[in-house]
Length: 61
Image (cartoon, rainbow, N blue to C red; front, side, top):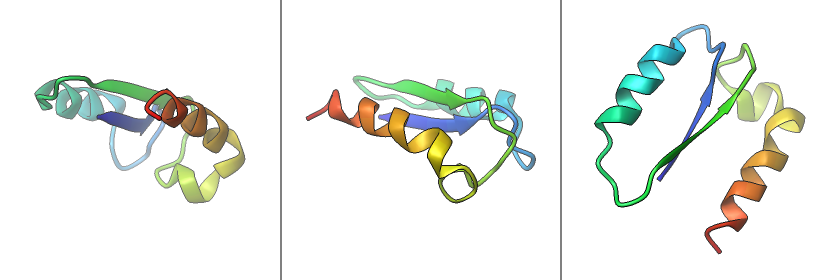
């Protein structure tokens, strides 16, 4: 389980993401965070996030 979060997400504060993350019960979990101020980071700043996400996913293949 990988939770992807933007630290500056306007609708959801980072503390909310942390609360949700802490509630997740999974054998393996981690949070991938970005220092962006956007909610839809895949759409709004794809060049800033896709590379890191691809690298993270490669760890699971």
